[in-house]
Length: 187
Image 1 (cartoon, rainbow, N blue to C red):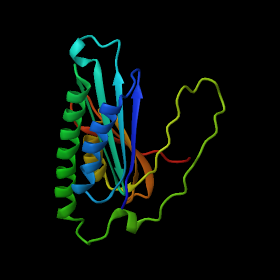
Image 2 (image 1 turned 90 degrees about the vertical axis):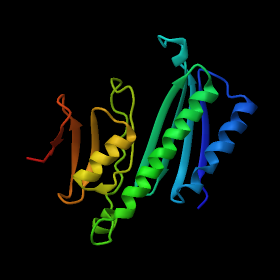
Image 3 (image 1 turned 180 degrees about the horizontal axis):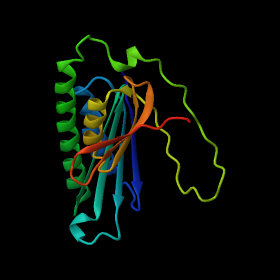
Image 4 (image 1 turned 90 degrees about the horizontal axis):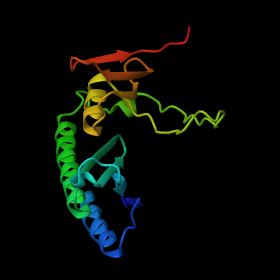
């Protein structure tokens, strides 16, 4: 499967040398995992970073059917930040592949068990909303949601479609390090 590839620069200009370096290295990710559909690399210069060694930021997001992997690294050199982020994504791919090989028990994925939900697109109604984010919900159980939350590096919460409960739920990390689950319902 041909993967889409995108490089974006924020607060910096992506030179041809940097563009070639990033595209050569990141395009090889599909050697590790064939199901990759999209790879997005965001390179930025954080002017307000406290330390000069944290000003160059590289963020890599890898999407495929049933997974999203993301890493972000900071360094004083954009090439070093990208290399560190790429190493982190490769470790996440290895961990994802290992967990996937163990299987679900009956051999079927959660996506096969539950019919996909129609995508819900909301129009902007008020000026108070500063940012909107849309994402596809992938059916999974609570254990898979915890795993996905940790792989994405989300520290506070994760929204997912619980295939066992047939409902959208919010997983959050408590102060003591344990997890909580919000189960909304219509009254």
